[in-house]
Length: 502
Image (cartoon, helix red, strand yellow):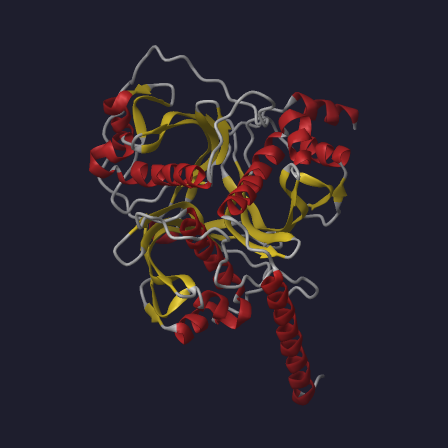
């Protein structure tokens, strides 16, 4: 048995080692070249493309392989590294269950610049969508730890590794420390006082760091506490205010915490708007207890974060974060038929356009399309303004779901869906956006979750992907069309061939 003195020495050495590691990472961060807003966006887009490419084996696995640098490595959950174009393509073909299969839902993408490029962490919730009456469920989850490099062809993965959610310490694993303030190279103020792309990026990064600081208790809780103002307030049934109280809140679950413990999934549908104090935010959040050791995963609750952000001399900080748990509203209206003569859309393959002309998208264009797609779920689930807040996200002659044409028909959609002023149901992941000759197109994963009262009896209702056409109008970016394709597990031809060959 170890004596208390020996244990104290070991603990002290552990603290010194952690302090040394933090000092090394902070020193490296100080030497890093600040990323531009477009760099952050392109890294975000790379991560979103990864889910689509892995789940669908697009272009026979070539899209997945193209996301990695020439010497790039992907390490799946079994810990066996995969590298080289042929092996990466084969991995995508082997794991895909069809061109419309969905599994990897990525949230909370925190990015940190480094001298070589950037590193990042993303939470991933893995869903299994049953068919023919089979149950939909959370099948697992964890996080990706990635190293990104900028190549002549754009940002690519140098290394990407999946770590399953795991309680407790992991000796030898050293995740990023995530420094503050979030550095963005092009952060000049806008002439009209509006939020700049750099402002949006910095606020997005605050939101992405929050779950990580809460779940891991990193820096003994100060990672989370320092996202707030010194007198910042978190309110969720109880009020927690001030740096030391927030630090204690983040560190109070340390018996179960660890660098790979993931529970609070958010950053879905994050709407950011200019306000008198600086900016406000609305973000969907979901607590998922990822099963370990054969235990089933379960969704614990669903909510919205209502945030107030303030810009300080040290960057953006959270002044107040309030949790609003989901509550159903009035009964939905009867569904109306829509227009009968709209032809059914076909799913678009996930292949980067080669050749042809595309309208270049600026960082602001990407941000505005991100915000458009984020507002969608809030407008649908609340049916605000009797559905017209939802309809006004579309151009006047838009088509929704191959059925509803024009403002009046589209405004009906939230009315016949379950809704309410505090209702949370459609968790949509950040959109994958591609420039086109006359605007942009996009794909977006969505999981529809029915949260049970008090977090009990929650269930997954639907998994699907949206396929969109966006156009830029005098009022900003709008949907020209949005089509929904349910998750399907039909085997892709290349997967069937691979199975037959084994």
